[in-house]
Figure 1 (spheres, helix red, strand yellow):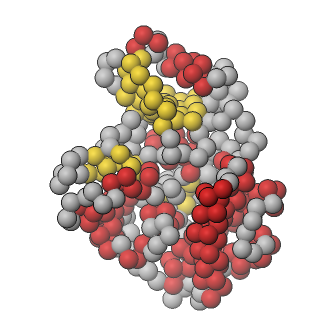
Figure 2 (figure 1 turned 135 degrees about the vertical axis):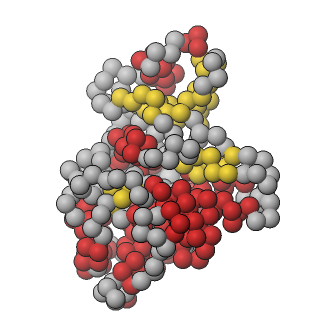
Length: 335
């Protein structure tokens, strides 16, 4: 079904006839779902997200991504920054297909403001973001770990079991798609498996977004008065080690260097200030390896080519190798 027809069906099921729609604007920047901003004649602004027509060209964990996204928004207690779910249909066999309609958050992606922030504004925003993420990590969790969608099976009783299933799945995808990696999937799996005991240090599942790069953080307000307006695209979320969010928050960097973020986070997180002990550093290396694996493997089903494919290989593959080397050389993870 053409996207315009899908969107009309979704809005109709939400009680919005075509006469109440002032405008429709496709939103770019995502890599999987189709996203449209809808402005209504009464001033409301919604974002409608629908999955691609076929789930064949995706990674295993991407089945049922909208379930994860709805779970993230409904679980969140930060109404000032996280979209509210207006309506959702999560059954792909429904007449409209699966979709989620959510409130639009104000602002523009943070990375679009690079170089435009006033003196001290970056530090203030990072501290505010730390408080927001700290509060989100305190959200009450279910009694299990993993993806709510069930794409990799039901929630697991331990973080080690869940994370092992997650890494095993992306390595199976690498084999299925013959993805280019700096080491073989078998070698990578052996490295990750040998360090998996450190995951038993995590006993309480937290609400993990796992895609908190600046493109998914909206900033609103004028110069000198900017604030975090939204945290969006929660479709990659899982219940797991809250520290896993530090990887995308410092994409290609080290969150330990982000003193402003950590100051805010320590004020609001249930565990207080972050202590970068051996366990945490080893776990972060594992989570970096998982994220970089996803970034490399997904280039195949996405059909990435040309300069973008070359950039991904040149930027991500060395970082995956560095993460694996860090895992191999780490102590046991317990002080």
